[in-house]
Amino acid sequence: MKNPKEIGRILKETRQKRGLTIDEVCNKTRIQPNIIKVLEGGTAGEVLGNIYAVLFLRKYVAFLDLGNTGLVSSYKDFYAAKEEPPLDIEKKPQAVNISLPKLPVLPVALTFILIFFAIFLGIKLKSFRSTREEKAIHAISESKPAIFPIAKDKSIELVLQGADNVWMKVKKDGKVIFEDTLPKGGKKEWSARDKIELWTGRAEALNFTINGTPIGTVGRGNIKNIQISRQGLQIKNKWLLKAKK
Image (cartoon, rainbow, N blue to C red):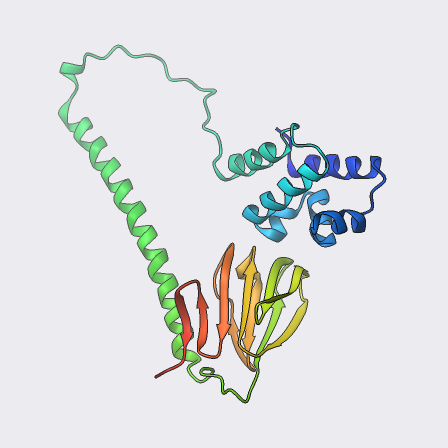
């Protein structure tokens, strides 16, 4: 299994052997130069998030005719192994001859109780995270009630600042105006008539300011449908901020 650095080196060496510049690859694949650089540098997962990194890697690998080399599979396996460490199987327990009918009742019952408790705890933790996100959304809504609705004689103003390197795609009134990496500390400003839509690989690295009001971050990880309209701020069908009736 190859790691992202090794995969990136193969991509770069293959591109250079074919006499291609990064700009030429960009023109042929529509993959932005900054994304090509992080793919070749082995840091795409840190900038884009793994879902987007795999999508761009698959496209780049196909362009370089490296589809049969297993690079995409190696990339996915590397992060899967990183997230879920393999079990330590070096120390194997000695086989013990146990007569099942004579197995003590108390240890068996205790085992089932522990398993049940572990499942229950996992459900509670998931519920806690969900509740915490709901509270965060509620806190945003309560603390910033005056932004929306945005009057028709005013434009929708969005300022994004990167707390870290982060890839994003931005649409203004249905037209793509930005698809690139915003560097750490970078800042972008846009105005729209009806709506601004945003996709990002790492939402936690973006701080939002809407029509002069700081919002902060709006979520974590890969978020595909952040929408800012005159009526509010929403992700897919969930409103984070909405105009009061």
